[in-house]
Length: 214
Image 1 (cartoon, rainbow, N blue to C red):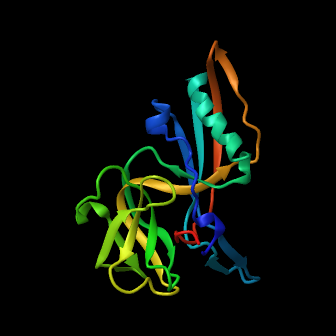
Image 2: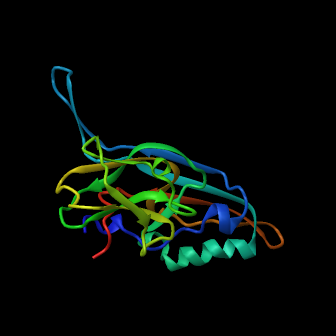
C-alpha cells in the first residue's frame, strides 16, 4: 500500500443523512510548493505535493444532544486527532481531475475519491479516469466491498494500472477526503436545554494513493 493514510475504514457522521439539517461548512484548498529566491531576484518553484489538501470547518448550531452524540461518540472512537477517517462533502458538484494516486503495478483497481449513492450508473455518469492525462477505457465500475460505504472503484478489465503512472478522476458527485480532527479541544456551548453549539475543524490529509488495503 502507498500511504497508511490513503485508505481508511471509518466515516465521519454524514451531514446529509445522520444529522438531518444544514450544517454551515467552510474549507480551504492549498498545495505545498517549495520556493527558492536567488540573489538576482529570480525564483525557482517546485510543487511538492501531487494533490490539493483541504481543511474543513463545520459549524453546528442548535443541535439536539441526541444528534450531537453521533459526533461525540465518533470523536472519542477516533481518539481525537489520532485516527484518520473519510469525510464526504455534503453537496454533489463537478470535480475535474481530482488526484487518485499512483499506479502500483500489482493492484488491478483504484478506489476513487468519491461517494456514490444508488445503483451503478451508466458510463456517462461514472465520470472519467485519466492515466497521465489520457482517458482510460475498458474499465469495470463497481462499489467497493470493503472500506467506507459508497466508495466507487475502477477495476481493470485486462492488465493492471501502470507502475508509477499518475491517475486523476473527473466526476460529478460528492467528494471524499481523508482527514483527522485538529489537535485543539472542541468547545461545546449549551444554548438551551438539550441543545448545543460547537465548531469542528478537520485537517485534510495528503492523498498519495487510493489502493485497497493489504
